[in-house]
Image (cartoon, rainbow, N blue to C red):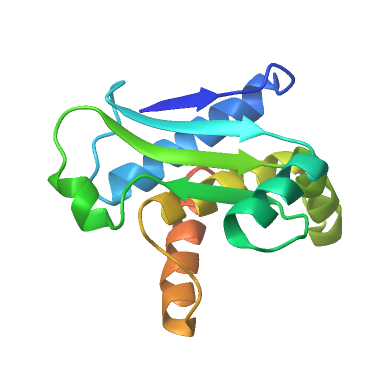
Length: 153
């Protein structure tokens, strides 16, 4: 599993390591190979201004957000049918907004960035939280991974 980080400013090794481990666990729990470099997720860190523009251009919401996910596949079934190299999609994170949220929720920035990674990976795998039943399934999956890597609220 390869997490391609597109930001020379995010150099915090411990946080990056936790993000990679969390992404790997998400994939493995869904039966997707994650041990080698044949599965990739691109992660970019952007400013509030940049994420607002992306949110406006791609989702029609002219507001800042913490994270955006751009999946390459429509469903987890489609992903499981693939063989060879898998590029699951792109994750765009705004660390400044994540820092504000970490303060609001009274936990660390590391915890918030790892959670946003987990949340986004599940979006790339086709999970959503628009309906209450979907939200509950996704949250249970997220919490299980967060517990497995020992990053709690």
